[in-house]
Image (cartoon, rainbow, N blue to C red; front, side):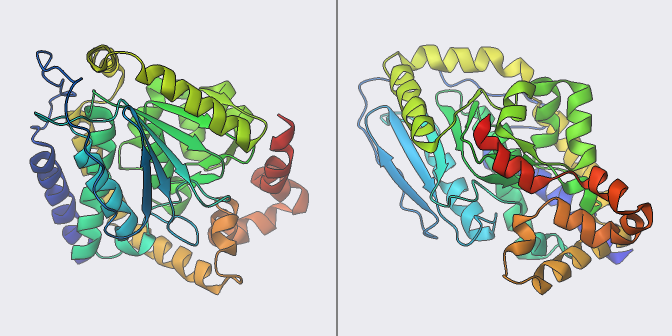
Length: 354
């Protein structure tokens, strides 16, 4: 019971702090940068240095590339979240400051775009976990609220859990041949709470969002494109980068005031701050329960037993399903077990043929 109370306080604090951070009261929709402001003609200012060393920036007058590198799996640790948060705060428009028209997020790691939230931060509602959760939730809202910049996810690896939540709140997503995504929180006895769950319904429809969220299965590049999770998928990494760069450069040719109004005009398709706050509060009795906390501890324990160290994460979500529900799966027999788990490696190897 104390764990549940502590997480309820934790969630209320998250909601309050996120609203303070974003200067936006609960229930408000996305803000629109001042339409009377002239975006062009300001001094070009470089992004802040990555204090934790997880991000590298390259930029021209209109486009900023953000290269993510948090070895070994781009886990959403406090360090990576802090650097993402600092960068997104910097992209907010202000007087006498030029902000990028387009930001492209990509990864140095060939196997991972952004992995899941560090599960250790979900245990017990620690102060460090609170800070990480506040900043993760704020990152999702900033991606939607900053209407003067288009955010693009260039994905050619695994993106799971919190990583997919962030990607789904970016404005566009493009996939390479090795892109794999999964929202696997349901298997771990809690729910996606950083905004991704609410974003999926308008993106791919309620029925498909329910299937994706509840089944905790991977989706490859071709399937993701068919569903609407990706704008387009490409057969090789070089084409992915070239086409995303070309799109960003073309968007960068045009006035930022038009970009700003277009993104704001489409904001009705995104969840409101009030809806996001309510969903976050519903997370408390689920994620804070003795059962859920026990499941998370079991998952962490199983992942630490795997050799090599990242083998468990490479197999998510099936590794989680097998670790937590192996007894029930074995009782069904090998054929039924295989049908239920699917073939993640077949998806991975066959995706290059899409």
